[in-house]
Image (cartoon, rainbow, N blue to C red; front, top):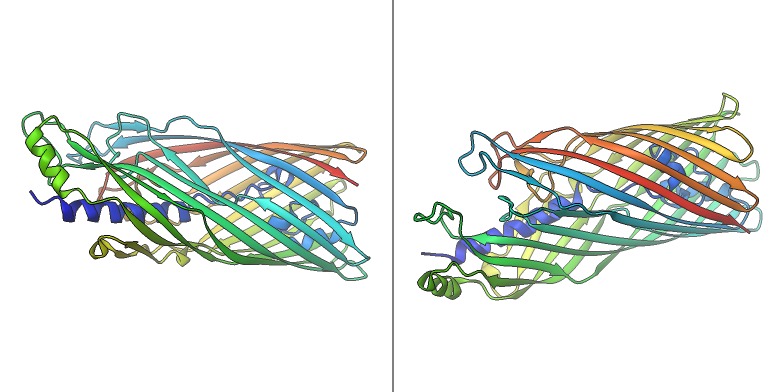
Length: 430
């Protein structure tokens, strides 16, 4: 039996798929409780410190030093049902292990003179954890995938003396780390002819060191009439170079001769490197305050997932296994509609709706990222007392059922996904 070429190809493709999974539908734009409770329709409002993420120009209107910190608390449900017409997956199911993901954020701003404001933001705008519960038919694609990012963004914004024009920009320093755990099957069909069961011969654990890249964001905020404002924002694409290790651990089949053959063909532990792209995000928004005590916002985001066109994966010890793999993601549009109602001097109530396109082509739907078009509804409240503020809200995100339509080279079936997000921020003015 020839194991080497199949094993190296499987691991290389799996690493490539990991990049695709992390770089597409798992952006986390909920980086402030007030904005998120308005479904993120905040580019033309941008009136708290989280404007550093949503539209950096907005911090120019904050004329008092302040800081806020908080987090998103996220739970996912995902169920897989095998394609009844697929010999491998028919009759199988799978579910995520339950996790509570905590995604923190923090912002601080300081006015300088009459027209400038300096700010610093700390947030995590991309992340993923897909951890499938055993027994799991898709373990040869992914058992556990994990992506972590953290961004530090110093920013500066200016406003005109008549307060009708505000401009801002910031530098984003983004750090990234990824891990992936999957199994390797016996070559060929992977099925033991005597037992009819799939044979696992090894586990592959891929992990990177922390990598980093520098990008930027810029924005503008324009008062076009007494009750209408327009906001524009741009966050540049980045590419992070990662170095890591691929570790292979043999799994005994119970057959000494087969185990010896596997051991002789199993690739060695070795360094790998990956160039990992992130998309750019362009936003235009409009806000209206014509109705007393109400602010309405509408944002349109374009995310350039087409930046994820090709992924380069290099194996150091076995360079013949290195791969240049096309991804062919497509750019997407997200529509966000939100409202903030000032109920009293101390209380606000917020609502929102979003429609988010999915960038992933059918052929690339895998257990690493079973992405789909999504619809979200939001609700939240805000409380103010003296220098203190408290904002809290929630979002329910429903993803359309996503079928591989029998076109996946890894695992065919249908994924059903939904997510619930709670957000909170606690702030103080000085």
